[in-house]
Length: 126
Length: 384
Image (cartoon, rainbow over all chains, first blue to last red; front, side, top):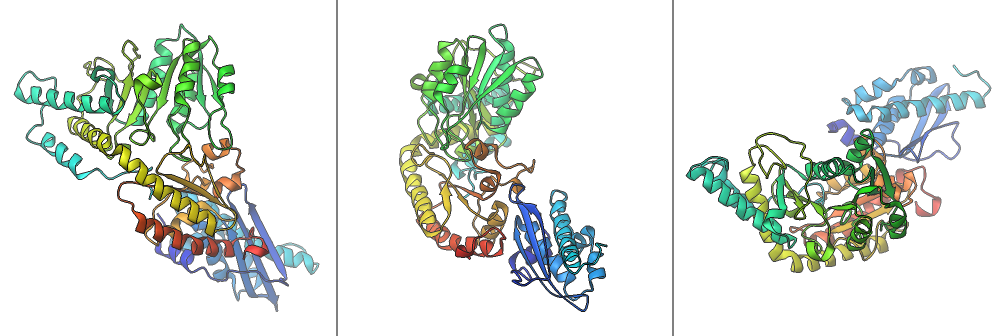
């Protein structure tokens, strides 16, 4: 049901953790639904210098957040905002249709983290 | 340890079935030796399935599955006896086939009431008394729940149904072969039986109907199974189910005790070694093979995937595992919140499980849970 890439990210997720003094935090989903993700970013020179995640959810939820952080690390904020839901799923060699909503959530969490940072520094949300 | 989902067919069962695929391929409706041989085989199988529940051969009919038996029991009884009443009473934790066929029957003018269960999953008999009135045509309460293992007070529930002249049906898919289900002692009128759940082949099931009870058939054709269920009989499957029943009768007592020991060890050591882990279902009134445990802060599908990588197979009531993406209605009926239902893990033990395997599982679960808790934003600091 899951691709090798999804299983790999599930077994060895990249960037698990929290950033205590994060510059931006994005949380989406909730435990009632069975999916909740938080992404923490550290921004330097308008780029994502460091990124971490925590996820409550299924294998796909964990894999998609992991992949999202891998795609976003080192990118500029604008580039990271352009990372789409579809792109995350594609990088994982696809997800079963019922699991597509997990990749949606992961990309959303990243965008929320960037929006959160921009709000904090007084910039308008793009 | 996911025997609740599927069981392997016993080798003796497979051996008993094989001739009926090739040399003895006859149709029981044929008037020659090949046909007569098929009839003999079918009758023998019927006798064995009947013995499993202390019934008479003439009270057993074969279907394609427990789901079909549930459909036939509910629809067949309600429609046939609709002049008696339009109310059907089921429990909140019935199998989805019972729940969905009941929903379907509301579209045909029936009224369905569900009796709640307590936090261990036992039906509220007082509530049942109130719900079963003289407009009730049928009551259906499962003998035991396959997800949480809780065994139901079937004898008392049947009494309540009969006081109001309602038919009492029980789905014994998860219970057969694990707990006593004698038809004269428990006094049910109809029962659903599964073949695969007693290590027989998939694609066959049975229904018990107390002598004198007639149902409106829904598969119409050449009149097989005394008109109840047409279609050329699945002789290999039926022979298999018969053989499985025969073996189950032999093994039942010893196996029940053996599974209970394994189950209790699995439950006890898991609950002891992992903080914020809880048993779902009743601690004692429980199927010998069922261990259903929930873990706070993590999700069931991720648990199953992690265990699968260690060669351990289990199931879960989490929404992520269900086709409907809804958490288990059984766990919700216990009063659990959504997130509690999502964190459940179900082990259903079987004849091939042993102490070493239980040891392996209890040794590995703590680290699996720790790893997922470390990743979860819900885990409180003390548990990281």
